[in-house]
Structures are given as structure tokens and as C-alpha cells.
Amino acid sequence: MPRPKKAELSPQVGTVNLGRKRGNPDFVSSSFYVPKQVNIRFDRALLTLKGHEFDLDRSDILSVLMDRFATAVDAAEQQDDGLDLDAILSAAQEGSVVETAGLTYLKLQLQKQGRDLQEHVAEIEQLAAEKVKLMDRQIELLLRLVPDELREKAKASLQDESSSQAG
Image 1: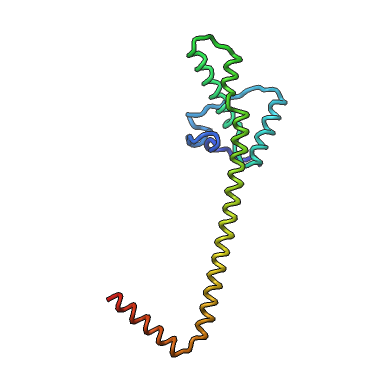
Image 2: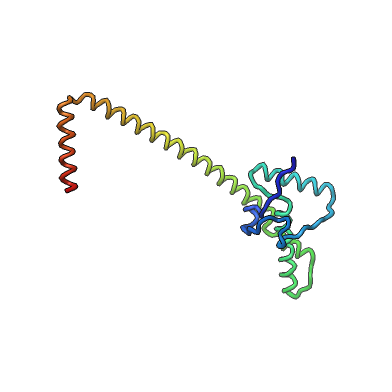
């Protein structure tokens, strides 16, 4: 069964929420021919990212790469030095693979620390709840040791005190 189509760009790629891609006039469909081995490596890379909880699809990645390339061409054209394809490709890839790999590692570490922190908070909350139960039980046992008449006097005294504070 094919996976459902994504309705928007993944959060890792951008924060633009333009609704569904198919049928949206802000998106266009493009087809490209690439060598089979490149396609296989690309698919394998996407699966690797999915294994690390990055929900990206081909259009997300290609949108970023195409935008970087177009930005690099625009910048080269503005410099009036002529268009040097090697320089454009270098500018388009600056901060991409190596920086993204570093950011991915940091993000994974942060996610792990967040999960660890959540586990510790849950443990602390459980211990606190157990401590409250133990203290309630101790109070209950101590109250059993108090004679009934003394307990009644303490109740009456507390009621008198609370009514005098209220009035």
C-alpha cells in the first residue's frame, strides 16, 4: 500500500505551510532523468533519514537544492564577473552536506537528551507520588494512636480557629 502523499513541506526543510502540494497552484510537478545509481543512493539516503525520524520526501530535498542553486546563480550574476559554473556549484553547496550532517548529529543528540529528560521527569513524578502515599499512610497510622477524645478536641479547636479567621 503506498504511503499517503504529504500535504506540506517537512518542518526540517521549511516552515511554509501552503497546504497540499498536488493541485496547489503554488507547486508544480517536475520530472528529471538521473542515473539509476544516483536514484538508488538518493532513495537510500531518504530511508536513512526516515530511520532517524526525519520525515522528508524527494520534493522537500529537491526544493532546497534547487533553491540553493538558483540563489547561487543569482549571486554570481549580480557580481558581473561572468558565470563560472564551478564557483556557482561551490556556492550552492556551501554549508550543505557537512553542515547538515553536523546539525543532524546535534539534533539527534538533542532529541535523545529530551527523551532522557522526559524519562527522568516521569521517574521523579512517580517517586514523588509514592512519597505522598507513604506520608499519607504514616499520618493515618499516627492518627490511630491519638485517643478519640483528644482527636475530637483537636477537630473542634481547628474548626473554631478557622471560623474565627473567616469572620
